[in-house]
Image 1 (cartoon, rainbow, N blue to C red):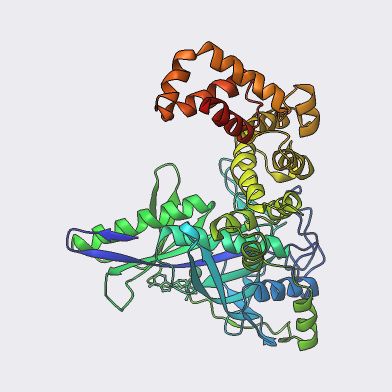
Image 2 (image 1 turned 60 degrees about the horizontal axis):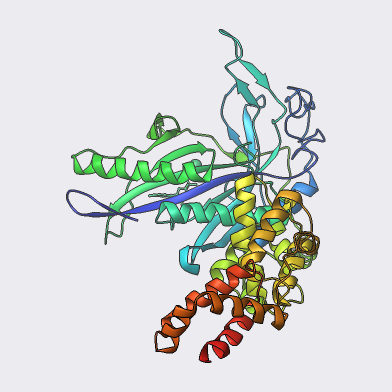
Length: 484
Ligand code: ADP
Ligand code: MG
């Protein structure tokens, strides 16, 4: 996206920081449950509440999840990483510091391939992924004069995933988050639910004149809770910065908030006097040293990820890159498609039906493939009936509609409603004879050279058979009869 200003054209520079809550039963340094939605303060150990003398013990499963994620973004897994203390005071941070990784993260230098419109792709560098603890939650809206603290989230393991400032448009930012979320979900390392806050995104945005090589000053937009809002916030913020600069102002480095109701960003706090977090290695924790054999073991057990699956779908089923990327966006969708396409001579037909008809119907119902009224087996059954000429593609759409409404299989619906395609030539002969007898004038016109009437005759015969005649047969016989 290029913004056309009063004084010239501007380019956007965007970097995203994503906090992804790790899927794990227990927290990063304690055994308490990390489950979402429990009664406040019911999942808090002495470590999470920072009782004096309590020591953190690292959760090996969380480390494995971070390694998996690092491998999923084709990054380097660092055999030695260090946990630091990031010191600040807040009521929902009982330790007075957050344990995080600063100078030596567990993962560095990965990449994400974005799926852009028209089947195009674009690669964005991932600077690093580090592990850290989440803080507790302050609740300010339950009492007129008191704030409450819920420490259930205190100590839950997060992965912070930081992109290079290589994203150039709101659409690329959206595609980046979609691809990252897909990989996290395929791996089962984060559920990627932005509304519930298990995946949170801060967007760093600056603008520069097209052709400039230096970056402009950036603003950081905090915790926007959907991909669509991230895209809107970036677009708003970039336009604001261009107008500000062109009116003679300067962008201040600051943290801003996205106001959903107003559709604008507003200042939250200045970054000019950036916090001094006084980072230092946590003396309660040894450096994290990984065994290369362990990394190799995790690598060998990695599932097929979206990009590899997409390439395979293009190759094996001859799908367009765009259709393939739509299908692989969710693992369950991809599996559904493969079940429908299995052993089929025309897998593209299967892709079309899944993407256009099925996704269209599910969208209207607010459902997805996991609770679809039409199972993969039943959709495959419908396609079988098209492929073996039992029904035409047009009748198939009616049958599909009934499948969506009733959950029944295609063959029973076709039998029940008598929708079987007429391939019996005597029935087609009779229908043609009837149409020709009732329209002698048109037959004469056709025979005297008005061949464009042919389509009209086909239409009449199809109508006469309730749409059930095999169109190819009708064409063939009709042509012969009309020729006289
Ligand atoms: P901080 O700790 O202050 O958030 P980082 O160096 O971790 O700073 O950078 C945060 C994010 O900001 C990264 O995703 C990076 O790509 C992005 N970024 C850095 N400089 C710019 C810039 N000038 N414009 C837009 N994004 C930027
Ligand atoms: Mg930041």
